[in-house]
Length: 248
Image 1: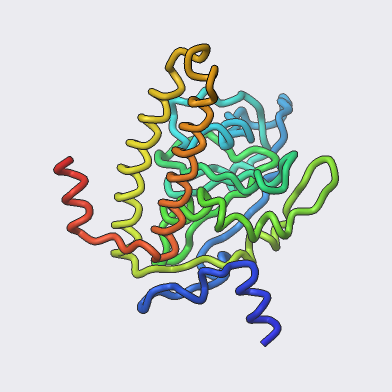
Image 2 (image 1 turned 30 degrees about the horizontal axis):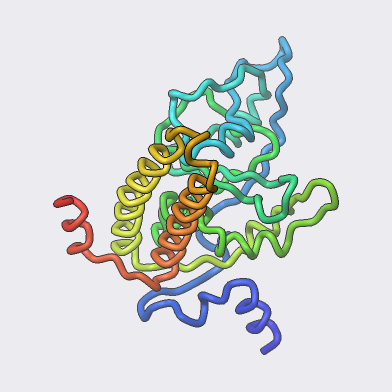
């Protein structure tokens, strides 16, 4: 009973997931690895490009368009940390406990691009889960609250591998995951487009009464709420919902 209470405290959505959904630890459906590949370059190692902390923190997706840092690595490191399409990279430390486990989804195969230091590499190994869905989960601040609770530090907070591996995740049927992924891809892209338009307004005119800050907070809150409701089943996504988006 105590164990269940602890789970519910960290992941309250457990009590309300829809019929047909399940939940499990992250490591039951995905491998979690912490990279130890640093930014140095040595002549006796293989030249690589590093996907670093900032690349992940500032981007929702990882593509070949990013300006990856040049470095070197041992072949065993390359074999282990070469990123693949469908991988999710997440920050494993931060100056603030509530700004940790920020994800980015790898959407292209990028030969020679290695997961760098200070990052967790999450790689789905089960057909029950998609990398896209894992990434959307980690974009939800409410979902990441369980990481915040396990972060350790004073001036900088960090997570152990166990914090990632033991994280509880909802698992919808795979067909529903795919619908959720498509729905959030489109709706959040539209929200981000509006946010960019708001941000590009005349700062002097808008900030004089705090309107810009208010609008940005509202958009961020709506985006986060939408993601959380979708990935925990509070908002069910149907084929009709996807068709409606296409018609907009």
